[in-house]
Image (tube, rainbow, N blue to C red; front, side, top):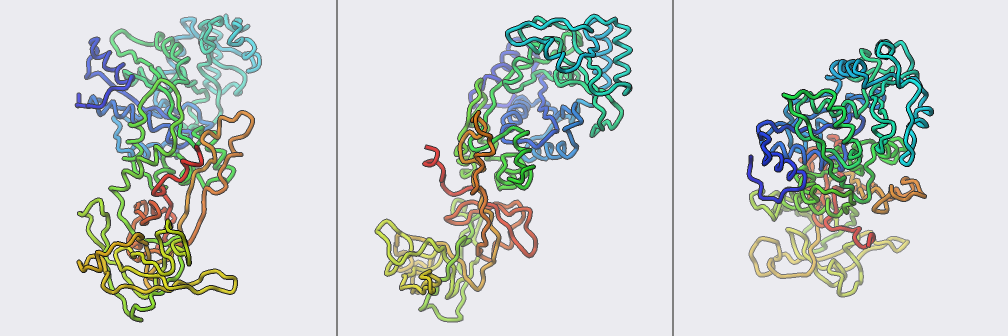
Length: 559
C-alpha cells in the first residue's frame, strides 16, 4: 500500500476496516461504471477520483465498465468520450468492460431463477403494475401472473428473447415481497423487451436486463470487492444484495455496495436530461461547449486535469449532498494556471495610443518574461513602436486619485517597456475618444538598470504594437446560470435562469508571439485572465476561450 498522509475519508475507512478484519489486500478490485448515455460532467469527477484513487492508493486494479443495458439512449460516441475523459484526468483502467459482455450469463442466471421459482413473466400493463405495487405508505398486492408455472414462464421468456412479443406485452420480474417497506423489493423488473439495435451487440438480443439486475451481477463477474455509488442508490442496496444471494458461490468474492454523497457545483446543472435540453434548445453549441460543466466542456475551456482533481480532492467524500460554490473550482484553476501558464499581451478593447516623441519609423524588440513565477520558462521578444493599442478603459481624461491607470498629466509604465505620460486625446464628432497622445521617457526602458528604468509609478498597462498586432477572436465565457441553484426552484423551469450574458464574442489585438500557440494551450492575457486556444482555430484565424478571470467577479453578486 502506498503512503498517503491525507486523512482517510469514510469510504477509505470502510476499505481499511475490511483489511483489518482479514480481507486480503491483494484481492481488492474497484471499478468506475458509467452509463454511455451522455457526456461525463463535473459531478462525475468525485466518483472517478475516488475509485481510481483507491486503485492508486492500494496499487490494485480498477475496471472501467460501461453499464450499457439501454440501447434507446446509449451510443458508441459516448463510450469514446468517457474513455477520453478518464485518460485526460490521468487515470489508467485495468480492464475495459461492458455489461453487454455478460448478457448471456445474466440470461442463464435468469433462467435458473425462473426454475427456482424466484422469477416470473408478468403480462400486466405498466399502469396495472404501478397500481399493484402500492405506495410508500400502502403495501403492494400479488399480481395475477405471479404464480404462473415454471414451464409457462420459461416458454414466455424464451419468446421474449426471440422477439416474439412487442415491447409492452411481457416483462420478467423477480419474485421477492410485494409487502416490503422498500418498494424496490416489490417484485422488481429484471428484463424488458426492446426492439432496438445495441451499439455493441447489434440485433442479437431482443430483451435487455434492468440496471438493478445487471449492476451487482457485473460486479460479481468482475470480482469487484467494493462497489461505490452515490446516495440515490442507498435504497437499491437491499436489492443489490438480494440478487447477489441468487448467484454468489462460496469460493468467490462477494461485492459490497456502499454510498457517498453527490457534490454539485453552483451556477450549473448536472442532470444529463437538463444538459441535453440546453444542447437541443441551442443555448449551447454542444456537449463540449465551454460553458458546460461536462468534462469535455471544461477541457475545451482550458481547465487543467490537475485543477479538476485538486478540486475533487479538496471537497472530499461525504455522507450528505451539498452545493459547492463555483468559486472553489475556479480557485484551484487559478492556482494551477498561475504556475503553468505563460504570460502574453492581448488588448481586448483596443484604442490607439500615439507616443508623440518616439521617433517615427523606429521599431525595437523588447524582452518579456514568459512567466514571472518560473524563470526557467525564459523570455520572448515583443516588438515596440510609436503607435500601440491599450485597453480603452485604461484611459481617462480626468479621474480621481484612486484611478491608477492613464490620465492626462499622469504617468504609467507600459509592461516590459517605457514610462509614458498622457498628454491628451482626439475625439470624433460625437465626443468619443478615438486616439490618445502621450510622451515617453526614453531612459525608462525596463531592465536597463538606469535610475529612470527603476523609477516607480503606480500603474502598469499591457499593450501591443499596432504595426505588429494580430487580430484574434476572443470568446468571453461567463457562468451559464444567474443563480447558484437553477434546478431547485419548484415553481420555475431551470431554463428561466439561463444567463443571457454567458457569452460575448469580440475581436481583440494580440502580440505576434501568440500565433505560435497550439490548440488547447492556455495562457494568461496579462491583467485580463486566462485564455485557451479553441479547437475552432484555423491557420487564418485564432480563437480564444476565456478560461477564467484573474479574480472572482461573482462573489458580491451571490452575497
